[in-house]
Length: 224
Image 1 (cartoon, rainbow, N blue to C red):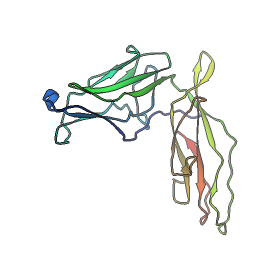
Image 2: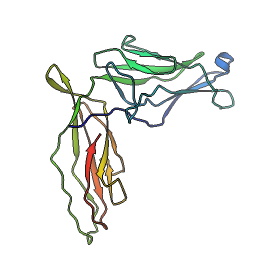
Image 3: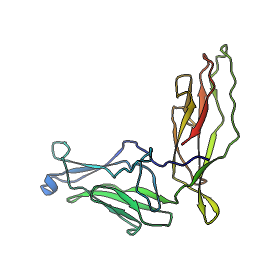
């Protein structure tokens, strides 16, 4: 079993606009960046895909479309108000011990973004393999691209001696040897390069190995 690391760093913006005004330094729109991760473990600070504490992020824009430096943006929970605590700098901590969803908005002056949903989940203790080991064999003469079966893992949390699954957890895969390359790479179900997946309701996540013939290579993967 391997230690699970949570987090996700993808850039996305949800924008809300209002009529021109003078409140909050002339802010006329606000963009709420994507959450660092889809979930936060109960009792912990929100982290990114590398397990680093990461605050919420948002930007306020003036009438010229320029970012307002040091804009006094606040973050508010729309429900389950006692489930999370958000500091002035956007650092979020899950105070609830119960798994639940919380909607959060960014606000400045009379502007408010569309809500984003954060899941509070149990603290993951481990990752367990949930698939049969996959072996790929090919020769330099092959012209076919080879793709492994699903390399599935399950995120688990120890609850009084009983392991329960953890959904909404970001799992990052990597090659142990050698590194990801044009010869062998990690891909998603569509065959596109991807080393990150999020556990579903069953607590499972997966990635596959895609091998392009033309070079001899033996690879092993390990979820982080």
